[in-house]
Amino acid sequence: MRSMTLVIVFTYAVITADYLPASDGSNTLSKPNVLIVTVDDMSADSLGVYGCQLAGTSPSIDAFAKTAMRFEHAHVQVGNCMPGRNIMWSGIYSHLNGVEGFVQNLTPDYPVLCDLAQEAGYFTAIRGKVAHSTPYSPYTWDAVLDLDTEGNKYHTKDPKSYGDSIRQGISLAKKAGKPFCLMVNISDPHKPFYKPGERDGKPIDLFLPTRVFTSEEVPVPAFLFEDQIVRQELSLYYSSVRRADDAFRAIHDALNESGEAERTVVFFCSDHGMPLPFAKTQLYYHSTHTPLMIRWPGVTSPGYVDEKHMVSSIDFLPTLLEIIDQIHPEPDRLQGRSFGSILKGEEQEGRDHIVLQYNENSGGNRHPMRGVLTKDYLYLINPWSDGNRKFATATTGTATYRRMVELAAVDSEVSRRLKHFDHRELEELYALKDDQECLVNLIGYTEHQGQTQVMRELLERELTRLKDPVASLVIGNQRDMLIHEFMLDQDAYSDRIRNRRRQGRSDMKPLGTQLPREALVMRPNLQVHRGQECEIEVSYDLPKRIGTQLLQITLKRVANLDSARLPERIERKTVEIFGSGTISVSFLVPEYLDVDQVRFAAFVGENYEKNLIHQNSASIEIKN
Image (cartoon, rainbow, N blue to C red; front, side, top):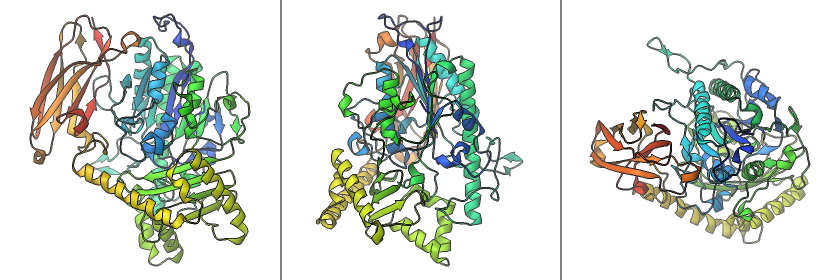
C-alpha cells in the first residue's frame, strides 16, 4: 500500500521459529503484516515530495516515497480527526457509521479494521489517537501501545517513543504467533506545536526537532495572509512537521531492525490539512488533500506516482481487506471500493470524483457541509450559511485567526476573508487548476453557470445514492424551506449533545473526557506469574467537588487465537476514592490461565457507560 501521512504497513510473514501456523492448520502468517502510520493535521504540500516550498521539512518521509507508490490525487472525506478516521477504518460515511463528530457510537452494527484484521488472524495494536480511531473506546485491540515496558505513558511528542512502540507491537505479535496489524498515529504536527526557548535554564519543549525553522524562511499559504504573527505560527507548525518526520524515521528504523520490512506493506497518510484557518475542519482542497504513499514489496513500483486516479479515505478499508485477503461479512455495506488493482499497476474506471462531508466540531456545534471534488473543480454546499450563523472551529483559537480579527479592522481584504471564514456562502465553486487555494468563489459568474449545475447534479446524485439527508437540499424549488427545517433539526441535535454532556449522559458524549487523562495513572507491576498475586498501583487526582467516587480496576486476559471467544475479564475490584491519593490492589493470576498475557483496566464511575475517565495498561507477559 502507499505511505501517506497515515502509514499502513503490510508485512508478508514467513514461517520461522517465531512464526508458526495457527492451531487449526491454516497459515495466517502467509499474509502480509500491516503497519499503518498516520500523521495528525499535516497538509500534503508540507512534505518535500509533494512540492513543499520549504526545504528540509521531511527528509525521512521523502526517502520513503522513493521506495513506495505515491498518489497525487488522494483525499480524505473531512477535515477533522475523529469523523475522518472513523470513515477510514469503517469504510462507511459519517451519517451512517454514527460518528459525525466527537460523540462516540456505543452500539455500532458494523465491524471496523480492528475486528476484520483479528478475524483474518492478525495481532492488532494501536499507538495514539486510540479514542478517535474506532466508534468507541476502549475497543478490542489486542494491545494499546501508549505505555512503555515499565508502564509509563509515552509522551505524544517524543519521536523516539514511536519506534519503541513499533518494537513492542512486533514483539507481541511474534509471541502471539500472528502477523501484525499495527496502527501508529503520530501526534505532530497537531497543536500544541513545538515550543522553542528555555525556562529556568531548561528547554521549554524537551523534544527538539532535528531542524527548527525560522519565521523568515517559511512559506505562507495563499489562503492565509502575509504577517509576522502568521509567519511565527507557521514556523512552529513546520518545525512540528519535521518532528513528525523524526518520528517516522524512528518507526522506519524499528521496522528495519525487526527484519520484517521486506514482508511489510507500508501505508502512510495524513488525517487532514494543517491546523490553521481555511484548512482544518473545512472541505477545501488543502483541507482534504492527503499525502498517500503505499509500499507493497514485490507489488508496487518504487517511486511511481499515480496521477490518474482519484482515491479517498472511504476506500482505505476495502483496499486493506483485499491486501490481507479478508472477506468482509457484509461486502455491500462498504461504501468505498478497493484500489488494490491500481497498486498492482492496473487502471480503474470511475476514479474521477470524490464526495466530501462535514457535520460538527469537537464542541458539538453543527455546521453541515457537503462537497464533490474533481481534478478541475470543487463544489461545496453549506446549509448552515445564512449570513448570521458563525462557524465554530478549533482554528479560531490560533494566533493566525486572532491576528486576522485584528487586521480586519484596517485591511479590507483581510476583512473580506474573515467574513467568508465566519459566515461563508450557501454555495461555493472553485476552479482548481488555477485556484487550489480556493480564493475565488465562482458561484454567480455567468460563464460558470453551466459547470455549477453540472457539479450540483453530480453531488445530488451521489448524496441520494448514499442516503445522505443533505441530498434534498442541493437542488429544487423548495430548497430554502428545506434548508431552514433541516437546520432547525441540526440546532436541536446540538442542544441535545450539550445538555447530555452537562448531565453526564454517556449515550451522546465521548467516554472518558470529563476528567483530564492525568487524573488517573496506573502503574502495574510487570512481574506477573501464574498462580501468584500480581499488584497494580493507581494514583488519582479528582476534583473534590465531585465527591466520593468508585474506582473499578479489572484484570483482563489478552486473548490469543484459541481463546478469543472466552470472557476477557478475570476479576474486577472496586474501591471508594476521594480527592487525591494512591492505592495498591492485588489480583490472583489463575495457575491454569489459557493465555500468555494480561492487562489492567481502570475507570471511575458507577459503571463503564457512565465513567468519568478510563485507562488501559499495555499487555504484560505472564511468567511461569
